[in-house]
Image (cartoon, rainbow, N blue to C red; front, side):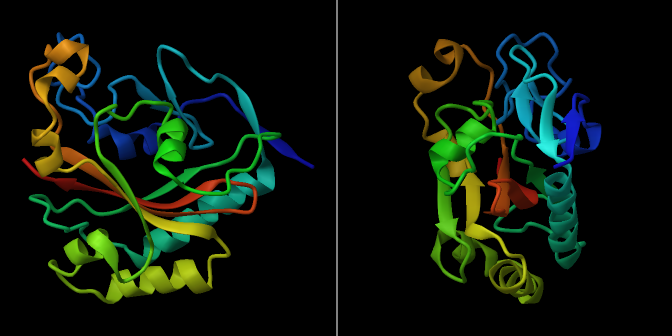
Length: 227
């Protein structure tokens, strides 16, 4: 079995998260979630693994074939959604990007995508009080009710069909991380740093993903802007 040592950070993958982070607009802010639903300390390795700059994962091995599979599947489903804005009530027009987190060599394969699993795979860089919903990737549920309010449904239906019939992935879900309404309803005492934060984020991740037999997460990553 051939493995790949992943020790470098992947700037292209990191850019997927960047719009959900506070960025450099407020460099004096000490709190990592000021103006961002994802910690400003989140970093991404070439395997797609997410870590935190204060507690970096460091070099790790993944099966070479698994990494190739993740990249190929993520690229394929992203092609289906090429040029499609996330919509879902967004004030912006951001399109989807390929997304994957390849399983580390030797780790127990992930079998189900839950809120707990998502927070873990994001290395606890998601705002702790953010509401995360995980729904089946079907033409149903809260996520789909938001999709049908915006634009052409054909690419969305094609994406669902690909996931369910052609991808070979399991635990197919749509993940919503935060939104404008529930974020506004978070009591200040539950804000990070005992409420000493200027504002919470307004750019929220939306993911359509599944699991490979080895437990890697593969799919697409989009965002909605809700100020």
